[in-house]
Image 1 (cartoon, chains in turn orange, brown):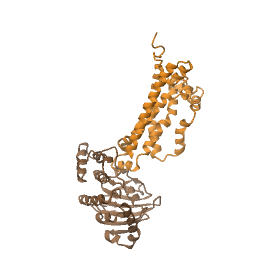
Image 2 (cartoon, helix red, strand yellow):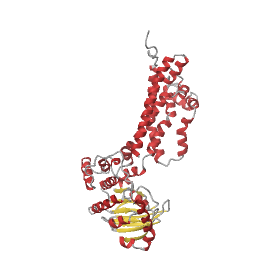
Image 3 (cartoon, chains in turn red, orange):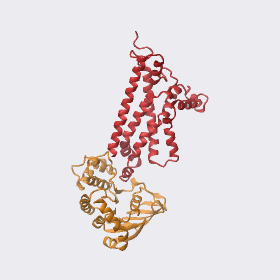
Image 4 (cartoon, helix red, strand yellow):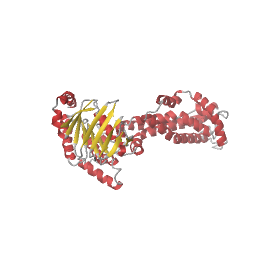
Amino acid sequence: MNPEVGGIGASGMDWEALAVSLRLAGWTAIILLPLALLLARALAFHRVPGKGVIEALVAAPLMLPPTVLGFYLLTLFAGGAPLGRAWAAVFGHPLAFSFSGLLAASLVFNLPFAAQPMQRAFESLPPDVREAAWVSGLAPWAAFWRIELPLAWPGIASAFALTFAHTMGEFGVVLMVGGSIPGQTRTLALAIYDRMQAFDYRAAGAMSAALLAVSIVAIALVQGLSRRVGRRNG
Amino acid sequence: MAERGLSVRLAQAGPIPLDAALACAPGEVLGIVGPSGAGKTTLLRAIAGLCRVDTGRVVVDEAVWFDSALGLDVAPHRRAVGLVFQEHALFPHLTAMGNVATALTHRPRAERPIRAAELLRRVHLEGLEDRKPAELSGGQRQRVAIARALARDPKVLLLDEPFSAVDRRTRTRLHAEIAELRDGLSVPMLLVTHDIDEVVRLADRIALLDRGEVRLEGATSQVLESPLARELVWGETAALASRND
């Protein structure tokens, strides 16, 4: 018997789906973190007009049912919508039901997981420590690199872990926007659902265990880093 | 006319009203006393460039740091000011040495560790260079804060209730050390305090601030013995002293 058919291993693990999930989680974290960092820092330190509205929009993916978010994103990405049309004109392929579309959706639904821990980390810095950096002769950019970033890094690492783990496990939005195309948009969470539909409990169990392990590692990382922030700023 | 030392004129309507004019000569310690909410900390923060007031001018040794008429407002990191904060405000992730070295970026890189070690020695912290703020006592932290302020090679030294966070015994010891340090400094020094002992020990002159205005300025004993100082300062100081003891 061939131990590996169509990316499915002997254990029932869909390696192709795992690769899509890891690629999606990695790219999401890499692209989203710098953007969320700038947003989180601005919200923490500056008087941003409409701050309450921006914070509500950032938090919205936490409250919206994933299928609702997926529906709106799919509507935006569809070939008839301006964004979907522009994307297809520039890149030559549709945004909906593609890895790029999945990544764009992932950036949106992960925004609160990336921005909120970083905003809290920046807000926990005592204001006089930042001021002490400036009067010590550090320009705002140098103060950011040498003082703010090292003090806020546990929050930044938490944001990375949460974003990565959440992307690995997301189901509703991914199904709506990606459509579960093998090798392109079928993630591990979707593969588990497929295997369950086919009563292949062994494969679903192996893949669920893999996602469970990712989640436990991420939560342990987040909690460890949160304690570290507490100790440092206490 | 050439202006030596610090010359300040600052005014704003709110949130904390300010309408103060002060001068401090090089090597002089000007004590700033007054009731809570009088604008003492706001005054220091405005001199350091940490808050902007509506109108005024701050000049240090002919260098203009702030002039509202000219629209000039030099950023805090370009002001060469040493500021000792009430609650130390040390960088918690850096050692005592790292804290002091952070304020030495205006000096060549090779010189920084030598100068940082020298300053820590000057504030009697030799042997504790590698400790982080959490591993230091309140008095030791404040010494690091003083060394960091001096590391900037400041043209003005601002002390904002620098010893209010330490116990009375440590405070008395720090007073003696500061008195010794100040003899070697030739920059204007502004000391904001609620502690009358502190101001008597360390200040050459006093400015009595009330609701943002300098109500009285002069020799320490002369100001402190005035009926106005009795009304504005002594009562509150006694209450604070009994709370801190």
